[in-house]
Image (cartoon, rainbow, N blue to C red; front, side, top):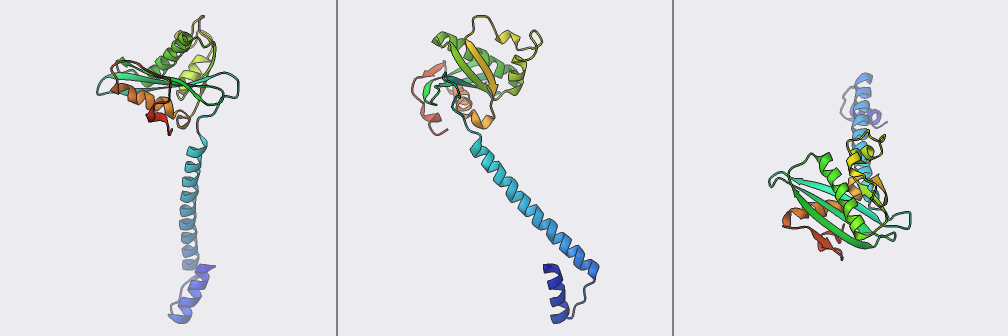
Length: 201
């Protein structure tokens, strides 16, 4: 409608004649521009909302949750692992970070992280724990057919009663930060109170 109105004004005031086809082309062009802008705004809004929605969630059960992540430092040729345990109310229990010499492939590093977390939880005496990682390939591998996964070595008969589930990276920020920070320390660290680097995550 705006294109038709503009054409009529151009003919009346400026004595410019516009063909019907040019008016239609102009209208379609404006429509495409409007749609592109609105789609961009909508898409941006969705991404912001998604980042706000995907956060760490309290367990829906009455036992703790341990989140795990791995990070790789190519310059120092190290692999860092971060892990944090929170109870069923979402309260911080304990966290740990550790580094290993060697630059592993990311799926190997994430698998090592799960293995380390399982061992650590066993040593803590926790018998029933849920684990979360943002490494979907590891989660899928753990639950593939018995003997059919390269990650079978992660599991053994003496592990606690556990489950390993996938979480989006936005819901796994704390162990990710701990994994990155691990390269600053010469030995593994354990926190029984939340370290400052994760307080606002």
